[in-house]
Image (cartoon, rainbow, N blue to C red; front, side, top):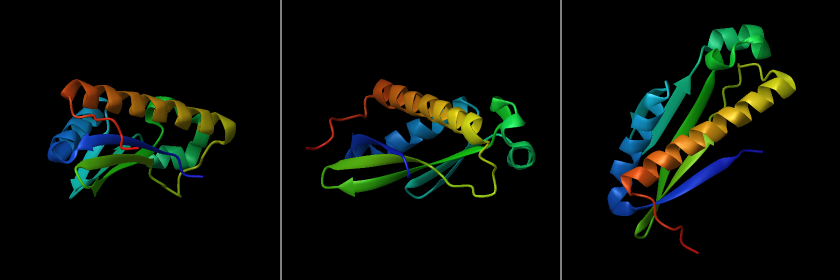
Length: 125
């Protein structure tokens, strides 16, 4: 099951929100690539994660996230997804716990950055 987190921003702030998100991810050590309305952020070493799985130090474990935008009228939704990287070993329960913890840190970082920039809105009901 794919877990996503969504952030609502005004459409006029869409570019600013993506720039703020990219900068926040860079500050936490992610390599950020931007293409159009999508950001791909990676961190860690893919080869070590493939070879050693859960034995890799958490700071060196490979993780990849995607941020994309969806425009609906006057609001834009920025969606955070854990991007699949099928070649990486999950590491069982240890790996799942690490991924969950890392994702929560990324979510908190993005929310803090977007809130500090003043671009978050209340999602439409």
